[in-house]
Length: 94
Image (cartoon, rainbow, N blue to C red; front, side, top):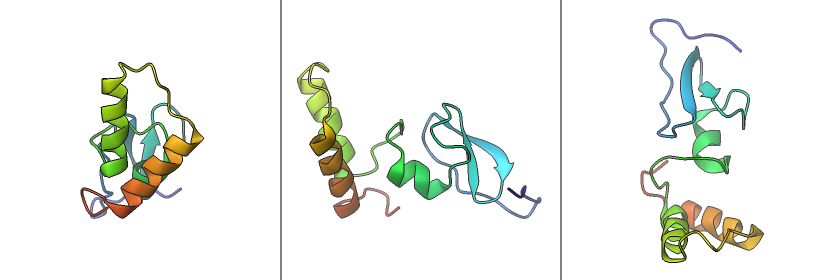
């Protein structure tokens, strides 16, 4: 993967696992969920994303987790709902 020059920038991701490793159109994942994820992979695909809510799905997931004190773990239908709600109602136009 090519490295950035001084004029090139990549979009930072607000996930605590994302690190700028000087690559064009991507960064590095500190937990190795993806080798060199792009901005879009981190925000829309990664199940390990740990940053501000991306959309309504993340807010619903966080609310359920808090209300149940973490005793209810997300199933595949929960994750599907989360992804769909994030697509339908994103918070940051990403």
